[in-house]
Length: 69
Image 1: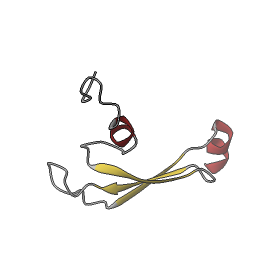
Image 2 (image 1 turned 90 degrees about the vertical axis):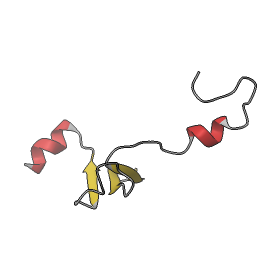
Image 3 (image 1 turned 45 degrees about the vertical axis):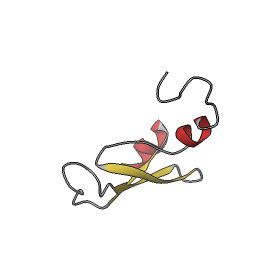
């Protein structure tokens, strides 16, 4: 098991509901209506904060991808 002392279940929710990562970008938001995931530059990234401050990804069906071209 990772990071949970035996018998200590009180911290599982706190440790498993907050996004965790060390990459150049951190999760900012998700819009279920549009399928857009927003990421922000991680100011604590070990190589320094990225020059691009915000990135948005939009999930689409294959048909929507073809129509978007």
